[in-house]
Image (tube, rainbow, N blue to C red; front, side, top):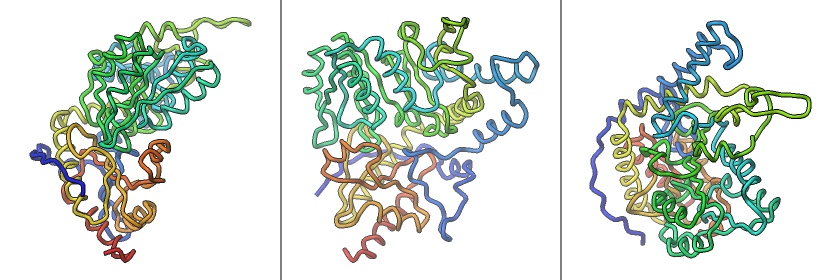
Length: 418
């Protein structure tokens, strides 16, 4: 029987009022009010973000960095202003913020550009067993091409990293350590400050996958001192098609370009070209200038709610959910039950496939994800093929959790496992 450590906290945010800022949450599915519990997959968009995106397209739409007419100046200023706002929010310099299409592309950029230039035959890239495929497959491709080795820090039974094993691996001075900030499966919040410090003492570079951290936690990436930090916009209540690579300027300057084309060049001749200054060196072609404005608006909106209030509210709702879920007979939670924890809660119901769970809940208007969550190696470590995952956002309430639990009771009734 799993036991939950007591966590005493009270909501400090009016989530019901916040939910009214999301037009989609007024929908009904099959006659049932929509309960969206899949923010780890993609977050819904508040009206403040939708308004900025509409305005950018309806009133200020022109390509950036090219034309000289006033509309183009407005668009360019809005795009670069968004970069400055995002950089300031992350405690970073303007030149350290590279826009990509998502976190996956950001990791691939590092693996391709930095990895090809600096990873040599026999070098080691150290990852963890809780990584998303996006922080495994690019390094597999690099290792195969460069003759490097991949090693993995184990996940313990409590869902946390084996820090003693980490130290043993760091003693071999891997070229790079890649670690997820918050697990999209287990909800584990890794001690990234400690990991960065330990890795740097051994001369290793560090990449942090922050896709599940950026929407929920205050981030000061300058203080964190990771060499590379990536996240995606659509999980941060912003639009799709925009991701961020925050990298130290000296590394960006030392890296070759990732893609070639317009906007990333200084001069092009028939046989050779020279590159634009960072960050534009890594932003070939037309950039996601509307999406960047939407992401900056999403961060402005979150900041307006208060980051401490957001974190406290989401932590309290997640703690409530852990307690309620453990009341369901035959339910196993995969991941930590106490301590620092993200908002993703993966679970299994004895004798019922996760896809069946999600399908039946979906008919009731309850949106959860089922599958391997792009973490097949971790699933095998857990001894399951898939899990059901509920993940919470700033708009979720105790009532949403209660709907989920009631739905799971109904799933068990349908399958005759009462």
